[in-house]
Image (tube, rainbow, N blue to C red):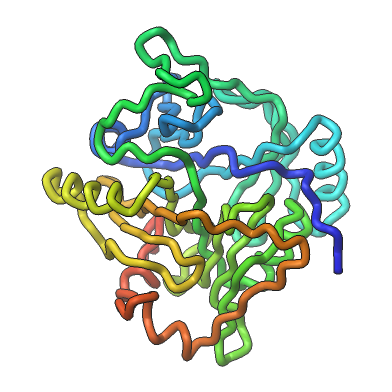
Amino acid sequence: MTEHCFDVAHLGHVEILTNKFDESLDFFTRVYGLKISGRDENSAYLRAWDDYEFHTLKLTRSDTTGVAHIGYRVSSPEALERRVKAIEASRFKTIGWVEGDLGHGRAFRFEDPFGHVFEIYWETNRYQPDAADKPALKNMSSRFHAQGASPRRLDHLNLLAADVTEFREFMVTCLGSRVTEQIQLDNGRLGGCWFTVNNKTYDLACTEEHGGGFARFHHITYATDQREDILRAADIFLENGVHIETGPHKHAIQGTFFLYVWEPAGNRVELANSGARLILAPDWEPVTWTETERKKGQAWGLKTIETFHTHGTPPVVHK
C-alpha cells in the first residue's frame, strides 16, 4: 500500500466564468445565499457563511462560461515546496508561480491533460467578519444570515475529461489524492472517479466528457447541514425562476442528498448533504461500480437525466 500523502489540505476555491455577471452574482448572493467578501475590477469574491477563507468562489466576468481555475490549499510552506517539486518532476504541464489575488498569496499553477488549470498555495487571507457579520458563537466563521439557500461551506466540484484514467493519474501524482469511488464501464474505460485529499468522501469528481468539449466544467457544490435545507432551497429556486435540472434525491455513489440547478449563465450548481460519512480507514480501497449497476439509476431509483451527461460549460459549438 502506498502511504497517503497529506501535503494538500483541502479544496480552497473555484473560479467560475460568467457572461451574465450581474445575473449570476444576484443568483449566487440573493438566491443561493453566498456572501460577498470583496470585489475587484472583474471579479466578485464569495464564500459560504462558515467558510474560513476569504473566498471559496471567485465569480469572474467573461465572454464565456465554465471554470477558470481550481485552487487547493496545502498543509504547510514545506508541503508547498514538496508538491511543486513533485509536479515539476511529473509529465504534466506546469504554468508556474502567480501572485495570487484578494483571497490568497502566491500560488503555483499547473494544468491537467484536458485544459483545466489548478493552483496550490499556502498563504491565505482568513475572512475577518465586521461587527454586522460577527457570529454569536466564536467558533463560527461568520453570522448565519438565512439569505436564500444559505449553504454552510464549499464541498466539491466536478470536471469533465475525455479520459478519466488519465485524469486519475494527474490527481494522484500532482495532488496526492486518494480515489474513494469509481465507475468501470463495460468498454474498459473509467466513466467517473471521485477523489479526496483528506478524510472527506471527496472534494473533486471527474466524469467522462460526452459532449466533445475541452476543459469543460460540470458543476460546483456547496454543503448544507441537513436534507431539509435542500428541500427548502428547491422552493426558493422555484419561486425565483431558477432552472431545476434534477433532484432533490439521493446519489448512489457517495450517498449524498442532492439538488442540481443552472445559474443564469448556464453553469451547473449543486446543493448537497453528505451526512456524517467520512473516509477514516487509512487503507481504504476504492469502491468500483459497474455500468450495469449505474444504469439502475440513483439510490432510490431516479434515472439520471440526459442533460446530466451532456450539459457542461462552456457549451460545445458544433459547426
